[in-house]
Length: 411
Image (cartoon, rainbow, N blue to C red):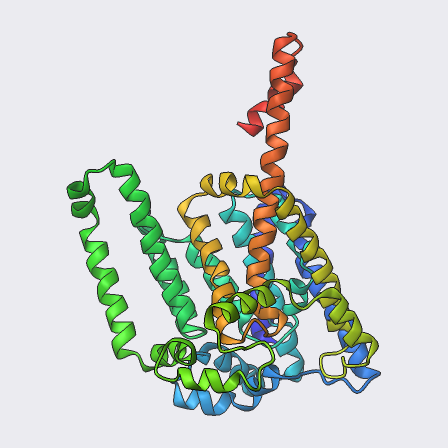
C-alpha cells in the first residue's frame, strides 16, 4: 500500500499544478479505473471469476524466482510484485490490481503534455474504455506505456537537460520490454537525424560534423544490443519461423492454423487485417451470450465490446477523412512522431508474432494511434472552418474582437 499511496501523492501534486489548464477532465481516467475495478470486484464476490487470471497469476507466482535471477526482461514488474507481496501487505494482493491506476493517469498527463497540452487527449478513456480497465490489471503494459511516452517527451538531442529523464525511461523499458527500449532509442535517433538533414538543406558535411557523436553512439549501442545481449536475440527469435532457418516450422503450423496457407505474403496480409479488425464486436457479443466470459469476467467482456464499437467508429472516421491523415502527420514534431511510430509498431510485430490474434492489450497501442490521428484530423478541420469563417467576415468587414480572439487561438 505504501507504493500505491506514494504514486497517488505524486499524481495529486502534478494534478494540483496543472488542473487550471485541464479542468476536471484530467480526473476522468482515474475515476473510470476505480469504477471499473469496483464493478469487477463485486463480480468476483458473487461469481466464479477469479480476482487474478492469466499473466497476472504468473507475475505473482514467479516473482521471487525472477527477482533472484535478475535476468528477465519483465524484471521491473516482477520486482514490484515481489515488494508488494512480501513487504507491502496491508491490503494483501489487492494492491496489485490497482497499482497501475495512478500510472495510467500519469501516462495520460504525459500524453497531454506531448501533444501541446491538448485537453481533448483526456477523452481517450471514453473512446477506448479498455485503457482505464487495463489499469486494474496486474500486468506490465501500463508501465511500458508510461515509460514510452515519458521517453518521447524527454528526447534529449535538442535539450540536454532532458537526458536524465530519457535515460530513466530507457532503463525502465529495458527491465520491462527490451525491444521497446530499442525502438525508443532507434526511432528517436532516426527521426532526429532526418529532421536535421532537412534543416541542413543538402549540406551533408555540416550535418555529419554536427551529429557524428550521436551517429557513432547509436551504432555502438545497436551493435552491443544485437550481438551481446542474449535477451534481445531471444526477442527477435519469433521471426525465425517466418524468415529464418526454421521456416519449415511455419509451414507445419499451416496444417494446424486455419489462417495459415504456407503462402507467406498472403498470410501476412491476413494476419495484419486480423490484428486491425479483430475482435469483431459481434464476436465479443457472441462469446458473451455463450457464457465464455468465465475466465476474464463479464465486466471485461462488456468493456471490450464497448471499446471495439467505439474503435470501429474511429476507423470509419479515418476512412472518411483519409485525405487529411498526411496533412496532420506532417504538422507533428519529432517527439510526437516517435511516439506514434512506436505504438504503430505493435501492428506489424503482433501481426507476425501472434498471427494477428492476441489479447486486447496487444492491440490497444495501435488503437491509441488511431484515436490520436482522428483527434488531430477533427481539430484540423475545425481550424479550417474557423479560418474560412474569418475570411468571409473579412470580406464583409464584419470581423469583431470575439472573432479576432478565436482566430488568434487557431494561429
